[in-house]
Structures are given as structure tokens and as C-alpha cells.
Image (cartoon, rainbow, N blue to C red; front, side, top):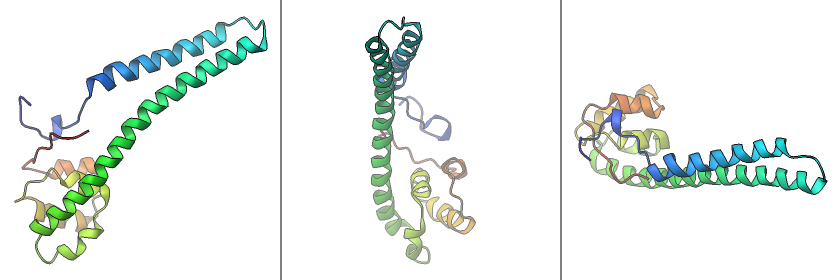
Amino acid sequence: MSEPQNFANHGKIVPAFHFFIVPVLAINLLIHIYQLFRLPAFSPLVVWNGIFGVLLAAALLTLAFLARLFALGVQDRVIRLEERLRYQQLLPEDIQPRINEFTINQLVALRFASEAELPGLARKVLSDNVGDRKTIKRLIQNWRADYQRI
């Protein structure tokens, strides 16, 4: 955490996942595909083993991506809960009845808004129906860092 978090640097890279697991599994899949087409078709068993190797390699790569997506999905649900509690404390009374109108994308993006900036941004997001996470994050002027993300 050498520099403060902001829109440009808030994306999280997990080196073990992004630079080791995914590349190794992707190379494994490519090797199995290559080997399948290089196999001499001596027997159906050899061909079926080659096909199964490709399927297994594809399944492992898919598993890695799904594990990441599932973790991010759970994180988003926790953020939804945290932000709804935060909104009850910070939003003016005229917006509080609309807290449940915020979508998960809006809540996830607005979590970076500072306490002072949140009421105005929340009002704008609801009135203009801004739903894209990146668009909302770009509207934030005073960034509230989140260093405990998955």
C-alpha cells in the first residue's frame, strides 16, 4: 500500500492466481489439445484418453475461474449488507426509504465514496439510474479505500 487507493489503482491482482494458476492451467489445456491432435489413432482407448485429458484440463481451468467468481460474488453480497447499514447512517432522510432500490452494482461501486460525498452521489445514481460500476467509480472525487477485498 505505497500509494493511496484510487480508481486507477483499485483493481486487485492476486499474483498466485493471475500469474501462476491461470497460466499453468491454460498451458496445460493447450498442451492436451495439441497432444490430442498429434495422437496416432491406433486405438479408440488412446483417443478417448486424449479427449478426457482435454476435458479434464478444461474443467480445471473452469474451476479456477469459478472459484474466483464465487468468492467475488460472496464479497459483493457482504458489501451489499455493509453498504445498506452505512447508508442508514449517512444518507439524508429523503433518500433512506430508497436504500433497497440500489442495485448490487451501484452499492459495490459507491462503497468507495467518502462519507461526505456519498449522499450527493447516491442521489445522482438513483435519479440518473447510473448502473455501471466503472461509471459510478469515475464520479467519485474523494476515494474511500477498500484494502480488504478478495
